[in-house]
Amino acid sequence: MTSEHTNIFEGTSQVVNPDGSSSVLLVCEHANHFIPDAFKNLGLSPDNLESHVAWDPGADALAQNLSRAMDAVLVRGVVSRLVYDCNRPPSASDAMPERSEVIDIPGNRNLSATEKEARVQNYYEPFRATLADLIAQTETPIIVTIHSFTPIYHSERRHVEIGILHDEDTRLADAMLINAADHTKSVVERNQPYGPDHGVTHTLTEHAVPYGHLNVMLEIRNDLIATEDQQQVMATMITAWLVDACRQINAKGNVQCVA
Image (cartoon, rainbow, N blue to C red; front, side):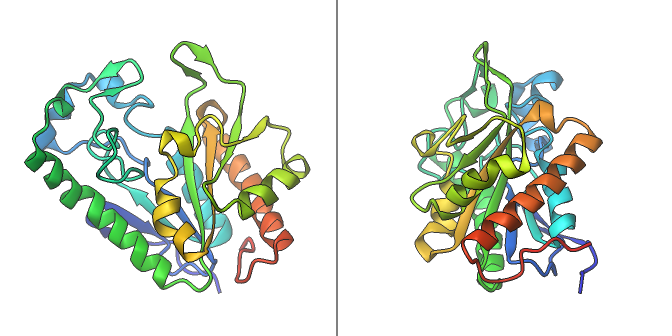
């Protein structure tokens, strides 16, 4: 039975559709560009705060459409990744970046150990704990993280349109890559435009790989999910693609689209 699509706030994360019936558990770490007042916008201009350096444009809307399509629980970040990137461990140099692409982040410059630890405890740990608890409550969980990337990075145009990312566990990524042509005409590539060497698979290695949970990270070029129509079309396509991939590897649990 399809659950009511409700939201629960858990500190620095929001749980969307908490009673979802799917084995798929969606994660959107970079859903929001909100920066709490105490950080004084980290010294950035309004344009920079709404750009891809502060969040993943389109990813949140896509993730929420996927949550509805699959009746899946979604954990979304509610603060900008510039305050703390919840897809990075505290030891990562870019968990609180001083520079993102070509933009300096004045409010992250020369942070003390105490200031960094405060952000870890206030933002990363609550997000990590919420996600871990939900995974523990899900039978045969399948972890799918949703991200977007900019078409032009460091002045170079990217030709890839959808990236299928993985770390050591390649099962779900392999199945999606094998079936890609059955579902999309987009340019689909493995571990592009980022991969494990860039430190982007932290959520997968923290919450899925050690426990044997099927997992994948999806990177969608943000010009392909800029409008509501694009977001809905992409969600419908990805839902069918995921279901097909999970069936191919005989994944247990309910990953079907719920009307």
